[in-house]
Amino acid sequence: MDQKKFEDFEKALTDLSSGQDFRKIVETYPELGEEIETAKLARSFSTTMVPSDILQRSRTKLLLHTKELRQEVPTRNGFFQRVPRIAYVLVLVIFFLLSWNGLIIASAQALPGDHLYPAKITLEKLHIGLALNPQTHQKAEEEYQSRRVDEVKRLLAIGRMEFVQFLGIVEQQWNDRWIVDGIEVRLLPETIVLGDIQDGMMVEVEGSTLPEGWVQASEIHLQNFSFNGTVELISESNWTISGRDVQITSSTLIDADIKVGDNVLIDVISDDFGNLTARSITRNDQNIQITKTPILPGDFQEKSIDTPKTEDASEDDQAGNDDSNEESKTPERDEIEDVEENRESDENDESKDADESDETNESDENDESKDKDDSDDEDESHDRDERDKDVEPDEKD
Amino acid sequence: MSSVGVCTNQISTSGILHLLLEIYQVKDRINFMEAEKALLTGLRGLDPQAITEIHNKYFPLVYRYAYYRIGDETVCEDLSSETFIRLLEAVHAGRSPKSSLRGWLMGTISNLVNDYYRKIYNKPNQPLHDDLVSHNSDPVSLSEEHTRQEILRLGLKELTSEQQHVLALRFGSGCSLAETADVMKKKPNAIKQLQFRAIAALRKYIEGEI
Image: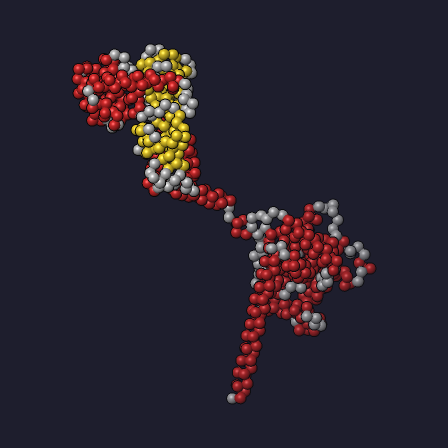
């Protein structure tokens, strides 16, 4: 019933708005007369006209505001506004991680001259820099040094010419042809050689790989080596060992209670001017201490050259050299000490010890020295001693 | 037999006409939606031409609505302008109208009018606008019709917010039943009921005053 009233009232309103006669409408819907009359009254104070000046002012205001908005820096809108900021951060982090891993994998095989090679070097430096533990630090450095050597070998294998820089141990020297870590390095008259480099010493080679299969060296720097000597002077920052001045730093590892006159094994780094900085100084007596830095095959030579004073002493040293060589191969201290004790007790069986050490020696030169008789050993050590004496003043210079 | 044939003929003719009318309405509705979509795109891009078109098309509706409820030109002008500025800022910030433009604009002007009255009533010291104050102090000098209008305007303020809104849409802006239902998001039958009750309440108020 009410619904019909609402319907009729709507029809009456439609008739009113279409301009039909009021009385006629009321006659049509007599039961709604009062409501229709009220509605007519309610319609009467509406306006159908909008003053043109009001319309114009409002439009101008709106267009001015539009201009201001156009000059504003655009803000995030639409889809981007609904996405929370954390989502952007997450996407960036995921992208960074993926690209970081991708870069590491992709750059691992890069060779000098490749686009990704600088990225590889940077990552390696970062890894070394982040290794706070000294052992990890040293391990990482050694690993990356061996990578440089591998890269040079790969470049030579594919016959590509590139500038290279690597660290390696001098294995052989024949005038202008050297073998450094298995890589043939050729020297020109203009090649700069810094330091008195001998077989077994660690050097830094700078040069170019040639398709012929060797590295043409532009510079060779003596990097580090070890030698045996007698402590002659001890001061806070400088020690003199067998006539050589050696700098001591806070990172130098020094055995306790070393006095002037002690026989020591010293591992040094050489800079381009021949200045020596000690990495470790170890007492070289019967209770051999193992240095924390790797002992190079060069130690063997230096030791055999520097120490012999008497025949017995030279024999002891020879035994010690064998030990040091064993240390570099198998750094188990107990085994070394056992061998040392056996050798001291059986001084008469030196040749037997030498035969045992032959089994473990790798370097050609060591093999050579052990294949000789005791007398030959003595002669050779004397010869080297003389050569070393000639060399020493140069190194001091 | 022939009468049955005429009857069938008449039914089919009216049915076809009704169908054609519906098709025309649907087509008209689609055209309207497409035009409004184009206007909204222009609005988002801050296109002055689209903004001017929207303003010219809808400003009279908004202004007449405000005028019906407030009756003061200056206030109505300010509130109507503010409605369009708000539309512009909302679209620019990525909050486009979810319903129709008309629905968004009429909803906003309704809120602005409500806010305006709220502010006035919250500040008793501020005098109400002349049109809102009863002139019954000198009823003799006014015609019966004028008196009724004044009473009616006062009575309008006594209605509920929804009742005021529906009357302002129907009588002030001149919206049709369907348009009013669209703006108020109600079914047409609910609008019919709402407007009838609003008028009935207004009549009761006038009778009480007189």
